[in-house]
Structure formats: C-alpha cells, structure tokens
Image 1: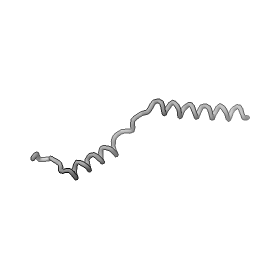
Image 2: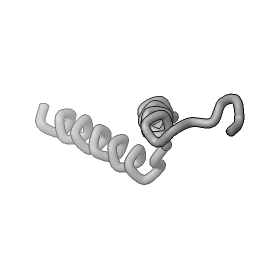
Image 3: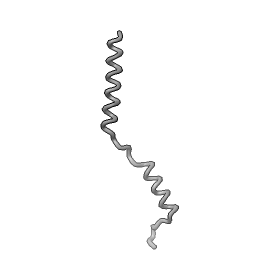
Image 4: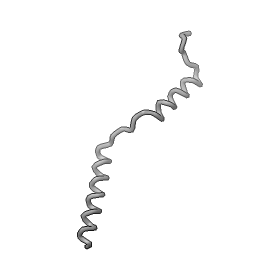
Length: 49
C-alpha cells in the first residue's frame, strides 16, 4: 500500500469535496437567454411609458 492510498470511505469524501468545489461551468446559451429576457423586459417598460 502506498503512503497516501485511500480506502473506500476516503475516496467518497474526496469525490464529494471535488464535486462541491469545482468551478461552475459557463453556459453561453443560458447567459444569452438571460440577457435577452432582461433586454425585452426593459424595452417593454420603455414602450409602456
């Protein structure tokens, strides 16, 4: 056995840690949809005045 070899419980803990701390994936389509919705809302507010 290696010096830092993990048992099953340790592997689960490490996997959970990495799942929690991995960077959020940037979703371009979702971001564009959000910007579009904000723009349409702002445009609608301007035409209502």
